[in-house]
Length: 401
Image (cartoon, rainbow, N blue to C red; front, side):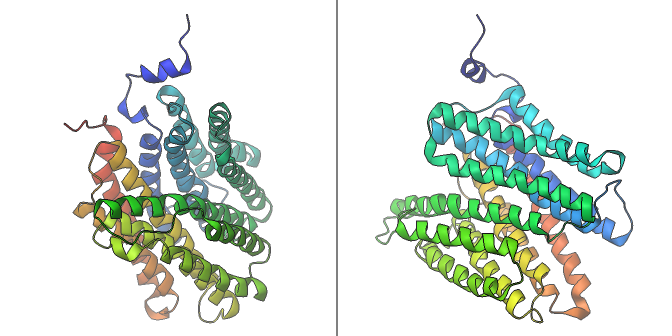
């Protein structure tokens, strides 16, 4: 009699890296985050060239948003969905196949000069499409309908990737275009939704253990839901009218709403625990990014759109993904949820990278040095993640006695 999928999952005895979704995809994401940054700096300096149809800036934008981030989203969802649905995780060669599709996407984009635009787009989109189908199956079979909005956002993210390829094929330059804004808006919504669940919950659990009397506001109350609706509307407007004065004014409202939301989660009470405060700081880059975007729209002479965009991409998205990856890896690898020295350095290096990139445009005389410093700190952060967390991702779970 043929084994069921569940039985096959239970009996997996292959490589440990294929025993849970976060393992191969977090490892590949960190490897790509560091490696692609090095490649991009060398491309900008003229010392290296990829046989890709994308110009260096477009390639950099695409590979961060749909490459690195696609792997992180996949690793997170393949790990979280079993908790949401009560079903067993995708493991083994099925998981290996998903990771392989992600690698194929990176190769298709990097070698796109030798391929047709249609082949490149299909090869790159295969991972997100397969991931969406897997998540849909788990939600439907597990009857976990409350998480359908998350799946819908992944669907829009997939569409944004397709639009990015279409724009790159037509115009040659797709960075900071509608497709990139749409993809980033989806990710910011995911962080708003999922961050709004996990940050106050993790903070409350930590405070309860320490006997605190003041607790975070429970997640997803009326204020949170209203904030999400307004956020969706403003980000959608930004996607279509990124330079309009109304968009700039609404970004100020967006910033204020998320500052208020963050304040309700009692982050100042977590300063002694880096694995908690980093979540609050990462979320804090969301309203900071909205404020920076408002300034770049209303007073462009003070801050460039590119600098404002990096508050969201490197700050909100970069730091939040690293915060989630370190926490999930330690928890599922059987390690204590405590940040060691290397973990703190990972966080601080990434924060420093964001601040240098945002401030670089304000110091014309040393701008290039600050940009190189930002890239270096970014690489240090992810290289250290690979050194400190790579072994946890590649070995079997440590069982604590």
